[in-house]
Image 1: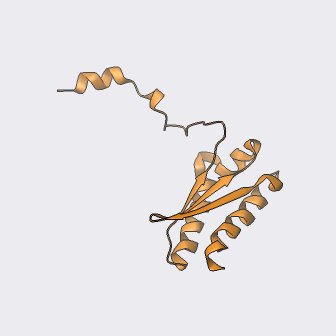
Image 2: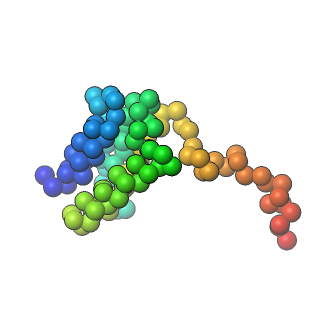
Image 3: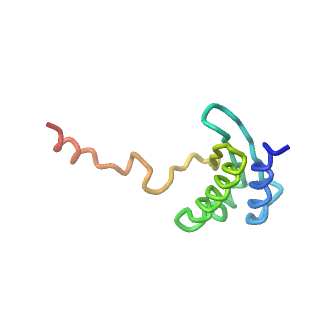
Amino acid sequence: MEDVKDKQFLETIVQAIVSKPEAVQVERTVDEMGVLLTLKIDPSDMGYVIGRKGQTAQAIRTLLKIIGAKNNARVNLKIYDPEGRTPRGGSDADVDTSSVDDLKI
């Protein structure tokens, strides 16, 4: 019972934040790295869960890590994006490779 507390906690928090709580789904997988919670929500609610500059998502991750520490487990959160967008600043397409070539020895 205690191993699904993290999943129930995530569902409860996210359902309170989003405008379509019926679309919230959490998949829980356990491996040698710990617990991975994959959050699936309606694409229109993505901004609510991520928050400005990722602050809401980071806060949820911090709370999940506290719950994991209480249960001696490492808990990670993955927010599923069906449109396959990359986070700002995380796209390889933004890198100017011409200046990198000049730095090679």
